[in-house]
Length: 111
Length: 117
Image (cartoon, rainbow over the protein chains, first blue to last red):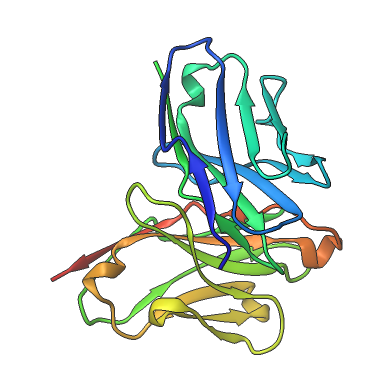
């Protein structure tokens, strides 16, 4: 099972601030995903990334969000100006042959 | 509309009892099917997957799931539950098998499992 790490594990930020969440897949993968889970709710897809560009994105993934893979290993999710409703657990995932493997998540708290 | 339904929000069983968690999907054809488990404050761990072949699939931690095409279901089962199985369980589908290109997962709303001693 591929190992996926995420940093930080918990981020507290003030409304309007920018945050960058990082994902480091240990082995080589082609497809990367970001999902989020608001407390008590189900996991929702944000964006998929393939061949260094966005493959698909959900309606949640508006202009405040961006993703990149700046150095060929780290995969980042940036929220430019955080809102209270961005408070959630953010999960990175990588695709195996068929399945997806998830990182431990970053808990983002916007105050 | 494409959807994944987990009709049971919360299930309570006694330790040692059998367990079945329900999952139904609504897609034009059979997507890839998965069960994930999430312990409190933790990430999502893959329990098992179905993408073709034998309709009864075995997973980790003693779990199994049965795919029933006629019922559009993929129910998770365990013959004897342990206290450590208390967690939230998510059914997920991936329509890659239908669309032909890698797609994202769509999750059900989850079933919270409580295990009584």
